[in-house]
Length: 114
Length: 110
Image 1 (tube, chains in turn green, purple):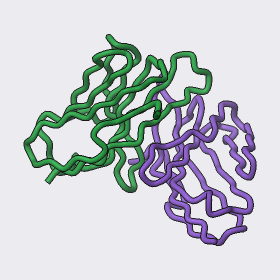
Image 2 (cartoon, each protein chain N blue to C red; image 1 turned 135 degrees about the vertical axis):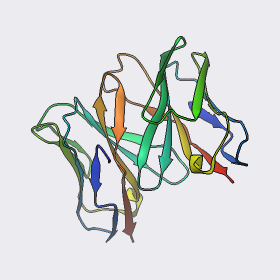
Image 3 (cartoon, rainbow over the protein chains, first blue to last red; image 1 turned 90 degrees about the vertical axis):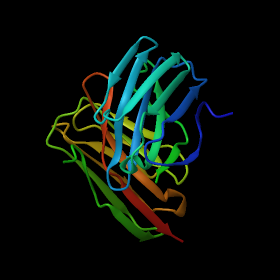
Image 4 (cartoon, chains in turn orange, purple; image 1 turned 30 degrees about the vertical axis):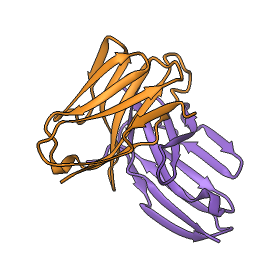
């Protein structure tokens, strides 16, 4: 079984709808991240959390919110989706004191906003 | 403006050729990572370099961190079709946050 799972894997929605992307991990890591990937722009950090009570904005948090329901779960919400939020979204985890700061990525969610 | 510039953006070569991918910045990073991403999957870490001038080898892949810790390169010797993918560099700043480059898409033809 995958260590970092994301649901759904694909989602098509309409402008103005509320969308939630979910991430679960079985690695026992305390740190979790949400990134979006756009062609030609690499991965950009949306939000990150270093433990259950810690939530921090990344480079591009406007239009997004997150919830860390448990150490293993980190969800990303788009309150009112817009077309320029069409992208590939990745969740990642890492461990405090992990030495090389390795981030483990989920398989991604492809979101299309019409 | 990208904090980390990767070049080239695209590279298509024949099996057996050598190649180098570059990751450049005007900023200093405490460490730099290289990832490879295949279609439909998330990025997978290849290496982390920490010390200026550091060189690390992973089979046919050689990674170098610039002396000033502002740039890095990835050299692949005798590329194989299995090396095909998107190569991403990521520089660490401000505790445990990373800036990612825009990636180099490599295609190795048999």
